[in-house]
Length: 153
Image 1 (spheres, helix red, strand yellow):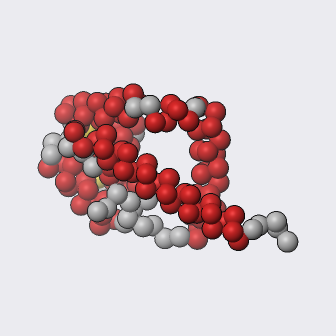
Image 2: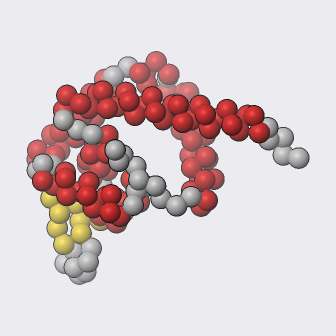
């Protein structure tokens, strides 16, 4: 016996689902005045932190299907926030970079989310502990799950 309680597992996933929903709703509220969805903001942050990222790698970081990421990239590109370029060695590979407009918006959105005090009330120590636990959950569940759309409505 591993000491695992079915009730504890059920309660954990119920709380995790609730936390994810509340976190998303909170992020949507913060990003709405900027005209961004959570998925768009997430893509901008990924590209901001990894300039020239390959679209395939961005797909993996978004944990989303190829069609949903392709649609998201097209939408964000039409808005003028990113630009795509073809890899010089392999034309099948596309790289994504922020435009000046996209960088400015990503920074503004990040500033809004950092200034928001919802996570500050939790505290750095508890955030680190929770992040470590969530990484364990993700590492455990990732091999068992196929990618599901993230940020789709």
